[in-house]
Length: 246
Image (tube, rainbow, N blue to C red; front, side, top):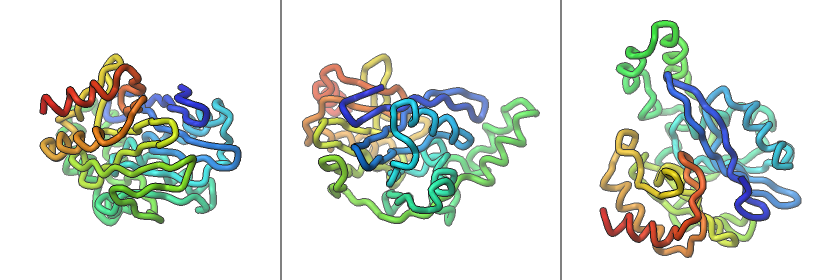
């Protein structure tokens, strides 16, 4: 879905751990360069590349990937991206989620221990694949660490907003020219209406709710949620309401 001239919300179908979901990475580009924010679930590389091709952005144009946090449905295809590019693509993330993405520490929410109960509840034929995914999650080196307030020199400026809570190193991103907030999992979208993060998958809900206050410092016209997609209906009013109700 086209947000503005060079911003596209991709729509990927994903299946894992017995469930299906639509995921919404964001692609931003100009005549020479493309940047991808989050990468989908493991096993979705061909679907991701096809989605890029469909909007007229060949993989060869991709120069950078920003990982908003460590969750497996966000980092899932980064190994294939790096392999395809022979390692020439720069990967960005926050320092607090870096050791999990690089495989130094197990992913907090999808380690074998964290997922033991979920895997046990699956049909027997699905359990080996689910366990293998938890035991061998995708990993990638992080080239550049991001901090709150950083402005990346792409496409008129992309500002980093540190929004911890969902994970320790969760970030959101604000594209200044289009006034678009890429909220990642700091928000979800339900039928066009913004909601706070999902409690069941958020590690520190009070911190995650406090993080929403930071969005009020920006002039936002559109919000892309990784789960639920695009919201454009009076988003500043919606955000003020969410913060006021916390």
